[in-house]
Length: 249
Image (cartoon, rainbow, N blue to C red; front, side, top):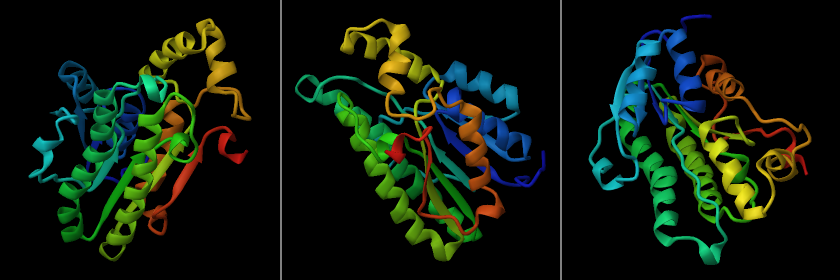
């Protein structure tokens, strides 16, 4: 693998596992200094040790603490997320607010904190891990769908403002990815729909997808890796689906 990211500093939120760690691993292999930003200190330290990176233990739900942040990053991957599954009438308002803070407010504040340095250096790559739910909706996921739709808009505005400064901003829109977050959803969905867990993946999660299999974290990281390369300098304000054909319907 090339070392084209040597001298670059990458910050990956939710970087201790799943998509985040897959991205962090690729960046490190390509020579970048990688900061694993995660709520779980033990997991972050273990992940950072595995790739020779740094840790930033941060609660992205505490957005007020990020208001005055300055973030030294050439590459920012907004990946951290949580999920709650419930009908709108049963959705806990505090859970809705928390999801907006972690998955929309925090990306805004991190982008805001990173842009001045990127502008000064004339180069930056922002990749927002959105979802097919940034483009489509599913029942029982009002908070997640709302946050991801908002992230799509934030990414496009960032692209327009950053263009003259050499900064790109894009979204990746995977379907269900084999991660700890999705493993938990399988149990939640089984309860909501009243079916066994082994039927959830095909009958609920992949019902709209043409390819009936989960996306792998490394597949997502491969696309992130291209977006942060010089080959993708003309790609900005875009949303790349990796959803097995879900959004083709």
